[in-house]
Length: 387
Ligand SMILES: Cc1ncc(COP(=O)(O)O)c(C=O)c1O
Image (cartoon, rainbow, N blue to C red; front, side, top):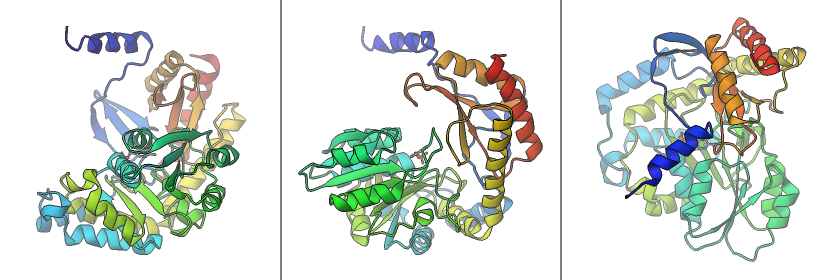
């Protein structure tokens, strides 16, 4: 029968403990989540600064709908590109000290567009082994060849760089989404310079939280445009809205406007979303207390976890995973935490390599110490004794 594989694939996933199910959330606050009528403390969100529920941003979005309505009505090259989108692009370019910025509806689309656009004439995409699925899929769907270097291993990257191709794009993440560690961008960018390659950084989890002004890995590691020609980040995490941007040279942006199918053939994000996103970027820059609070929560969490004998992965960011090592156990520990009132996601293959299944705990500036303490006490019990 046609498409028989659907049933067998679902059965296989169930028997491997890899079956995915959505949970319909009925209420969401900065650190709380209600699922099927039960409230939990949320340790699974990427809303690192607590901005998704900011009254100021809600108001900015609401006010903008009075002027712009709720939808953009067309793709950007038709009539979907407004002064609101332009203002966000210009402000971001100024803050990031880039010539130009281009907005995308999602980070997934932006990564696909970059990989496919820059590999139009062939070449190599040399990506960190732990790069996000959108980068890998973008590379596989491009005219380039994909090679992967061992995670954060600059000497392995160096060995892969001896290609004669004109166009080599090295891709990595500023902060790795499932591990929380950071890329040694200075060394990676030096390696690119030595081999006439371009560096692209996906800073989905660094933008907003890293750097004095919150402008992410490029600010923290002081990488100007000539050392980091393609910077991409999303708005769906610390910024608290949705969508993404690519920042780089005016030629890069003009090229994408003229060729990126994900950009040209997709209805643009609502202008009100761009207005709220810009308001968020201004808050990110001016309210450094949010980053300070997040940092202090991270430090507290790590110190207490250590005292309680909980083995965390080596991360100094808001992403604090606990390795569990197999999918069944990841589900069981996540369920045990839920029973105790904490929402923590079990991350399984193929999101992470087989055998590295984990709990992905994410911290926010909105968490308070008592909640961290409560989680850690339950976590110690669940992880160490398997209760
Ligand atoms: C590293 C990374 N890149 C890209 C994306 C995709 O971004 P978006 O959710 O805006 O599609 C995500 C997660 O969603 C991510 O974690």
